[in-house]
Length: 233
Image (cartoon, rainbow, N blue to C red; front, side, top):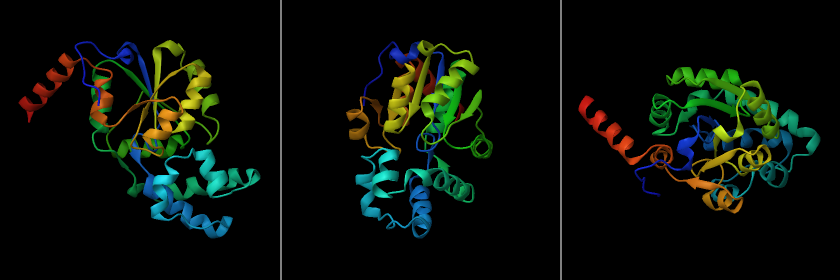
């Protein structure tokens, strides 16, 4: 973990922080496995075993769909639609990663504008955020393989300069999408893809929510926040 200095990381100069949702803010790995295994008989692939998960974390979402599940291209849209429908039936199993609510609220209190750009639906995301008492300036939805387009549209729709924006995600495809859009990216290692896969794709990684927060705030700000928290507890 990088120890914070008296000045924020390069990312401390950013004005807008965009977040992925599934795998970055909320833990969906076991729900993802459960849905894939429920759909296995329909799409004729072997169910995913728990011991496979570490290997799958080294693959992109595209690779998992095409090489592990072996879903033909023309069936991907139908698979995605059914998977999202099953996801909505399991939202009670989806929870924020510990510490992420504090990260979001702290960054917002420090003046950062925050948004979500995710392949999940805005309706599902909004419902889960309301449940957990979080709000963002905006939420944008993309298709499974359309994140570059979604990011470009978000920049235009929200009148954002790419130099002012950083994206926080958990997948290799997030890194690829940000590269296409000339947006800086910070990858978290607690989601779908492993630290090794993210770094191999050229991602700058953080391993804990506290490390993520430290990349945006100075050590003095973090100390002040810690003192304020202890005084009010």
